Image (cartoon, rainbow, N blue to C red; front, side, top):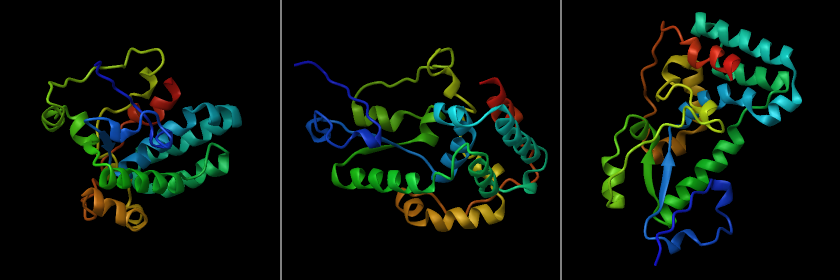
Length: 210
């Protein structure tokens, strides 16, 4: 007779108890994978695994590449930045894991009728659709002051890939994620924001201060 709320990551759903189908409501967060790439690129040097593998010199070399990207976004591609993280030992490109996640995510949405909550709408505070699905009022709570999770908060925005991607990035990643982008309803034809300087506070300075 008590309400039960369970939060799981995709890789923790297999064999989960209770089974997701036991719940009246099932929610899944979806996000443009091209935007996920930018977040992954900037968060990867802060992971425990990366910090155990590399030293300060490698992190500084990566930060220097980010500063180059900030000053001249066309000078280095996102794909080249991922190649650099692999070379430095910070971690290889996340493409294979992302493809697994997207396939699993879309399978849940189709087979178990998970209700999608778009990250882009959620981060903008547009919660009307979620509240309607749940039948209760929904508000967001900031965790920026949390000792455990405060470092995760970076830009609190979406669509950064439009500033970060070069045309060759867009072509490459559109081809890589084409099926998933189409199924999730994200357009392949997007206008990149060329000539816009990337904010260091959400890039190199974010890594330095965290």
